Image 1 (tube, rainbow, N blue to C red):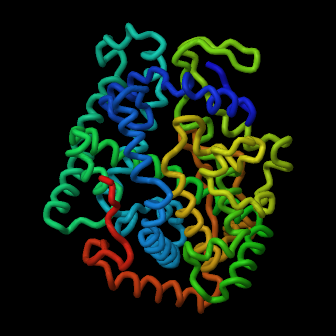
Image 2: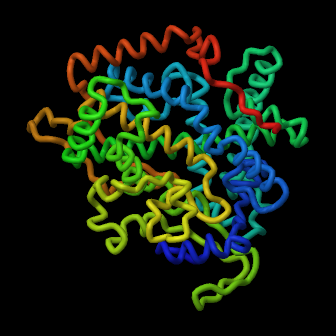
Image 3: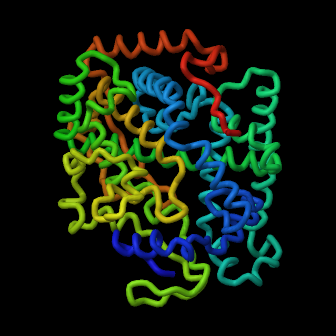
Length: 453
């Protein structure tokens, strides 16, 4: 295992040598058992992975991401309304994925499954069966995690296929709304992939976009508790540029400090703290005077890069000003030739660069702008001592996709007028939704992606 802990090394090894550093290591429990060979995150090189990559790039390119803005604005309004009604559950509100609320049954089942997958991936069994393949034939009473993984895969497959067939039925009936799963479905006949492949590709996109975005937003809320000066500067820009106008994606070009807050949030809370999953060398190669043997795991040490004081001055401080004037998107920044000017490394490197970054940039901008427009975020107060309760920014959850450990905060409307505006915005938005919380009609200007072109 080789740990890559500087921007230059990541550029040289994962970007410039991507032809031979694009592989995945052996993840028997995670890929073969838990995922049935279908999960995008752990997919090894080959024809199936290339098809997945092709479809992801087609469905999530910058133009398609822009077409999803009506969804993003709707969710922004829903998030603000949820926080107004129930601010203490701010972490749960950040995890909504186009469901009526965080108590939605299917959403809870999805999130429980995602946590269970992560938990099993981090067991000692997962590591042992990769290092000692003979253990894969051990009975389940010796390695119970293997039995649990087999049982969970069956349950997960039923869940994802259920959503897939539900979407297929709505498409056949003409009631489907534009979305990623619909676009994948429309490619099935041409590309000749199975229902399970499509269901896991759609499910994998939810997995990739749910924890990462919500955890980054959770980290941003913590940053606002700890660094009130940054909050004041951001709110000052919103008030100066927009006044009482609700922020929308089209306003991004006029809000450089809010855009910088997005970049700093992705740097300061590196949710893919050591990369989503290690790369692996598909053959022997040389780089920077070192020999990398075939099969070596290559870990993108995102945390080390993001908190390198030579790269970011005073890295523990949440300071969006460091990115003011950087107008590149996450994708533009990741693929530029000068790695010293790359904003952050959360979305990976090389040929496994995250396809969803165009959507993530827009989601985070909308959520951060909306939060600061509507609310003040301050420390919770200890009822006994009257002192503010400040979270420890160095404490993360011990998970592959991490977030700050649970903390408390006060989220209060900036004024009675802003609280009323949040209620009015959601009342107006909800009038076009049906009883399931979905659009009655496709919003004006939004259309199905022409995926077959």
